[in-house]
Amino acid sequence: MKYSDIITIMCAAGMLAAGTAGYAQSDSNVYNERVVVTSRYKPVVEESQKVNVAPVITDTVATVPKNLTYDITTRRLTSLYQPSRIKAARIIGEPATRLYSNYLKLGFGNYWSPLAEFYYNSLRSPDRTYGVRASHHSSWGTIGRPDEEVPSPTHYGQAPFSNTDITVFGKYITRGHLQLNADLGYQNDFTRYYGFSDSTLFAVLGCPRDSIARSDYRAVYNTASLNVGVKTLNTDVNALGYEANVGVTDLFASYGQNEFNINVDGNIHYGFTIAQQYKAVAYLHLTYDGYANSFNPHALPLGHDTLLAAGLADTANGRCALSESQYRRLYNVNPYIDFIFSGFQIHAGAVIALDGYNIPVIEPRIYPDATVSKSLFNDLLNVTLSARGNIEALSWNKLRLVNPYIMLNSQVRATSHYDFGGNIRLNLSKKIDFNVYGYYSYLNDDLSFMPNNQYALENVFTPIYDSLTRVKVGGSFVFLNDEMLRLELKGNYYLYKNQRTQRVGEELVELPLYYRPDFDAALAATVNYNDKVMGRIEFQTLGKMPYATVKDQTGADSTLSLPMRFGLNLEVEYRHNKALSFFLKFDNLLFQRYFYWQNYPSYRGLCLVGLTYTIPQ
Image 1 (cartoon, rainbow, N blue to C red):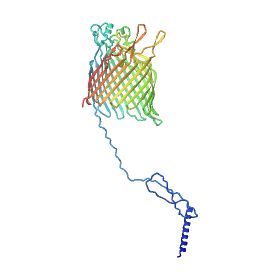
Image 2: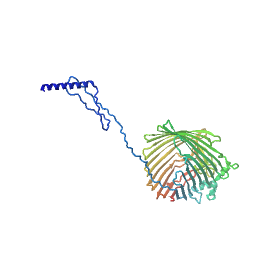
Image 3: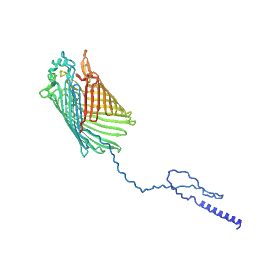
């Protein structure tokens, strides 16, 4: 074959191939090529390189480049491996702390002051507890020294006090989540109306102290009480719960005093949600107080001659004109609701009282019961506003706990109060807590005392009841350094205005208020060194208190006040081991002869030393 023929055949074949390729490109608009990528999927779209598939030749037919597209389909890989189940872990708790079933405390101090306390309690049990507690503290010291030549104005003789209390208690939880509890108690308190000096006794009755019997001016109070109660322990939402307690107290005291009290206290509560978001609990609190008392006017303490001479004691019917003995009762109904809304803690309710205590007929009274609290700045600041009120029954048993030198068959009333105010708490850290507050209160029949001028020695007090307004401003500061050191500072300032007045000439003059200090303050430090040595020192001060009004030389009224009082108390305890410790307690370390009440001076200092011991089993 010639060389020219070979060239001709190659040209023809090339033209045929070029024509075929051009025809394929012009008939297809999609580059139909499938690419399968097998690799670990990464959600990243990367730029691909252009792929030129057209032959690089010079031709009259233009070539059109195509974009390469990827179709990536992810598929979940189903594993056939099934891991074995893990058994529930069993948490091994710390060993239970050893409990001791008894506690004994014994001590003795100056002024012939014995101290004894004993506690017994059942050991750990899921459904029951029971025990007994008993205590006795007394002092038989003498205030002042007698003068053999003249009656001494500073000798008050023996000024004893004695407090004895024994209580048996028990609690049982049933399978139905009910808690049953009961306690039975007896209390004996002993004191004397010692508020007169030798000079006063001689000036009034014309006799020395040795010529009178101590039983003629003693005061003995015996109290027996029984309380039983039931309570549900189920606190689930949309569950009804309740609690009820019944208490019976019988006070039988010297000089024929007797008072019987029945108290019923209970509530019903129900938890629910508001708007399917906010939890709330609704309560209905009910209380009842009933009192019946009697009195023997033939038996009266020393200095009662003027009471009989004034005709105030009616020996015929066994009653006293100063206070009519009768049956008194007081009913309280307190519905309220507690819930949290948008960070606000809200307590909203009211107290509806049926007062059959102050008046012969039952009269309704209404008091507010509302509190709103809000925490700010991640609990750094807490602000609380409140409007509260209530009425509370007084009784002979309550009066003698405030002032044991009250007049027999004293008049009793129910005290009501309305309190409006706010509280700001600043929690700077876990170690520092600062609290300030202010309240405006209106009090009706607020309790106070003054000497009864019907008793010649002026050593017996009669209760008086004032209607007044009170402004109270105060605060507290607490510093806690772990558990070793705790510092506390607190104080209050009071401003009173009596609503009771008397007419002097053509003017209405506000009556004075007695036994209400203008301020009080306390500073205390508590130290705990490795639970081995513990101590507390506390300084207290109480502002001057008015106690009487007398006429001065010009005939104007002049108010007498007890001087400002200071007190420094100290307690130290050394724990030798868990069973044995030793303690020292000192009250009135400044040896100040202050007055609790008019004509009733205190001891200069009372020191007690003793030990505590747990009897091993």
